[in-house]
Each structure stands twice: as C-alpha cells, then as structure tokens.
Length: 127
Image: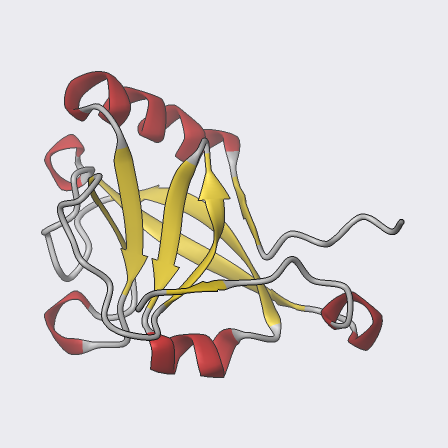
C-alpha cells in the first residue's frame, strides 16, 4: 500500500512557537481564512476558540493540532502543499495567539505534481 502524501508541514521555527503557545494556552487549533481583516494569514487559537464554517476543510494536523482552511480558499489552494512558518512582526489581523510574542504565522505554498495530487491524504470537511 502506498503512503499518502501530506498536505501540511511546519518549519522548526513554527514548531518552537507552537510549543511556547501550547505551554501557555494548552491545546491549539489553526484556521486560515479567505480574507477580511485577517487577510489570508493562518490564525492560531485555543482549541475550540474558533468554529469552522460549514464545508471548511481540515487539511491535516501540526503537532496534533487541526489546521482548518476556509472552504473557498481551499478550492483555490487544494493543489498546493502548505508549510507553516513564522516571521518576526505583527500580521494584519492580530487575533492570533502568537501576536503578543511579536511573531506572525505565515504559509509557504508548493504546487503538487499531478502524481502527488492523485495520492494525497483526504481532507475532512466541517458539517
């Protein structure tokens, strides 16, 4: 049986920030919206601190924490691998838990090859 390809990964810098946040807040979750005041930057919340909309997509987990994407944004980016990273500075939204640390999560995208796309891990949809 062939191993399924993950849609999501994280850099070491992002994992360090996640460890800091989980020590302070406990279980976490991520949500990447499609616009509005937070732009399209990924947001980190305490688990249950944000409720995905109907048909939003959970593309995987980082350190065991769900990473959800707005349903419309997912349709646009479903052909891409997401790598969660972190940068110094404040993002446009400021609602994310890393903001008080003077950091902002961001995502790097890489298009899947046609072969990779045919062998991806399935997404979970919210109801």
